[in-house]
Length: 151
Image (tube, rainbow, N blue to C red; front, top):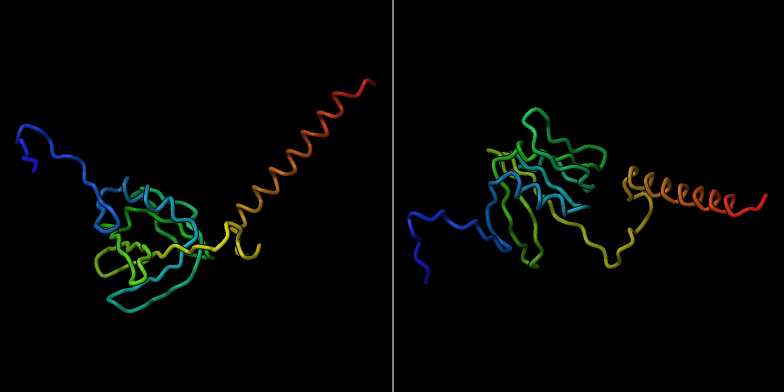
C-alpha cells in the first residue's frame, strides 16, 4: 500500500476502460483515435439526432463550435464539461461527451476487414488525398524516366 507524502505532488491519473476525463488534452488524445463513429445526441435524455460519420478534427478552442454535419464531426473539447468512458453489455467501448443536459455519445464503428465496405463511405477529403498521392507518384515516375533518357 502506498502512502501519499504531502510534499510530493499526486501522480497523474490512470484510467483503464472506465472513468471520467476532464483534462482537455486527454480528451483530445482519446477522440483523435476514434475515426469512424456512430453518434447519438441527446438533450435531457431525449434523442435529438443520431447518425454515423468520421471524426475529421478534434480541437480545443473557446471561439469555435463543435459541428456535426454531412457525416463529418468537428469536435471542440471546450464544448463539453467532461468525457465519460464506458462499456456496453457486449463489452464494447463508447464515449460520452457531456455538457449540462447535453450528451454526445460516440460509438466506434469497426469492420471485419480494414478496407471500408464501399467507397461512398470514405471521407471525400481522404479520397482526394489518396488520388493526389497516386497522381504525384505517377508524375514522379515519368520525370525519373525522362531523366534516364539519353536524348
